[in-house]
Image (tube, rainbow, N blue to C red; front, side, top):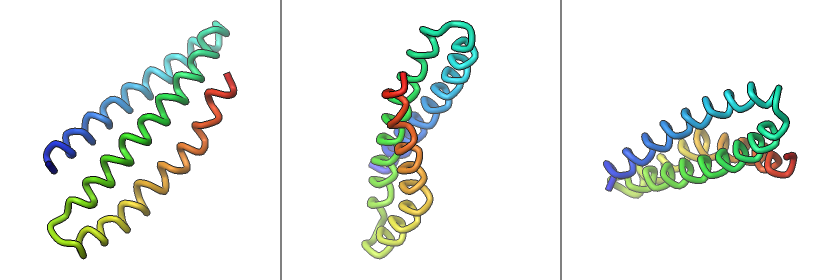
Length: 101
């Protein structure tokens, strides 16, 4: 199970990086073409929200899959501090993107 979750997190990371590169390209094209700008903002916001949800769920599952309950509790504290809290901040900012376009 942990191997599957690890591969899922790796895949989510790769897709997030590809999505970020495509968002940068769309922003560059959006300077010249307004329709690309509007659609790019909406797609970037939705993609960011989906990425945050996927990475957050996978991180929570990895944190809970520790060998003992005390290790899992410690893992959850670190995971909340360094993964879920930053993802919550990113999600809070990204939720405005679909409404702006």
